[in-house]
Image (cartoon, rainbow over all chains, first blue to last red):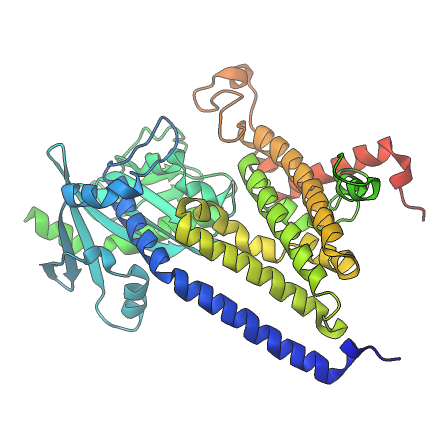
Length: 248
Length: 215
C-alpha cells in the first residue's frame, strides 16, 4: 500500500506550504528586528572609529571597545569633524559615518566618483585622520578603520571580518596583529605612497622597523593577510590627495 | 542520571565514547578540521551545535510523520537553516557582541553533516523526547572530540590555550622557548587536525576492540 506521504501531490503541497511558512517566518523575524540591528551596527561603527584613535578600554592583551551606552557621547566628544571627500573637494558632512563604504566601492566600479569619509579626532592635543577601508579575505568581506597623522603614519588600526577561519585569518582582529600597524609609514622615504604589506618574509617579527612598509604575517592566514595588504593599498591610496592638501 | 531511564541515559552517554559521532560514525569531520585551530572556537562551535541539534531533532521528530519521504533531506535542511538564521538574527538584535563571535559559525552549523546525519538516522524514527536526548548526546560527543583536537592544535601550534601564552613567549624567548622549543606551525593547518582525529580513533579502538569493524 502506498503511503499517504509518498504521493506526488502531497509532496508538492508540503513543499509549497513549507516554503511559504518558513519564508514568512524569516521575513517577519528579519523585519521586526531590523531597526535594532541597524542601531547596533551604527554603534559598532562609532566604536570602531573611536577604537582606531585609541579611545577604547583595552587591557593588556585584548581589544575592548568603549561600552555601547557611552559610545554616542564619546563620539561627539572626540570626533570634532566629519568630512566627505569627493573628487578633489572636501566638505563637511555630519553624517559621514553613515556613508556605506561597500556601496561607494560599487559606485566607483561603475565609473562614478566615490565619496570618501574622513573623521577628524582630537585627543591629548593630537589630531587623528580616521578612514574606513574594505576588501576581501579568504571567505568573505574584511574591513577596518585606520587612524593616521597628517604624514600618513598609522596611529591606530582596527580590522574585522565576516567569516575568516577561526584561529587563522580571524586573528586579524587580534591585538597582536592590529598593534603591529601602529607607527608604520604608508609613504616611502621619498614620499610616494607604498602602503603596508602583510609579509611572510620580512625577518622583523618584533616589528622594530617602522619604515619598511611591512608587518609580520599570521602563519596559516596567507590569503586573509594578502587581503589586508590589498585593502590598505587600494583604499588608503585614494586619500593621498586629501593628505597632500593638508600639508600645503 | 536519576531523572532518566536506563535507555534514555544510554542515548546521552553512548555518543560520548562508543558511538561517538566523529570517531565512530564519522559525521561532522569537516567542521572538526576547519575550526579547531584554537580552543575557544572549538568550545563556541560545540555549544552552538548542542543548541541547534537539540532543538532541530525535536522539530524534525515532531513533524516526522508528515514529512514526504521524497524530499525529506530538503525539509531537514530548511528546518536547520531557518533555525540557525533566526537565532543569528535574534542575537544580532539583542546580543550584538555575542553574535559577532558566532557569525563565522553560522554557515558551518547549517552544513554540518552531524546535524543532517542525526535528523536522518534518529529523529525521523523516534519521539521528540528521545530525539532531544539523542541530539544532546551526539553534540556532546562531537564537542568532546572538538575540544581535544582544539586543545592539542592550539597548544602545539601557537603555544597558547584560550589565548593565554602557557608555554612562554616565542618572540621574547621565555618559558620553554628559552631552551630551543619551537611552535609547530603545521598544527595550525587542517591536515594536522585529521591526523589528531586519526590518533584519537586509533587510541579509542585499541582500547576497545569491539569497535573494530570486520572485513
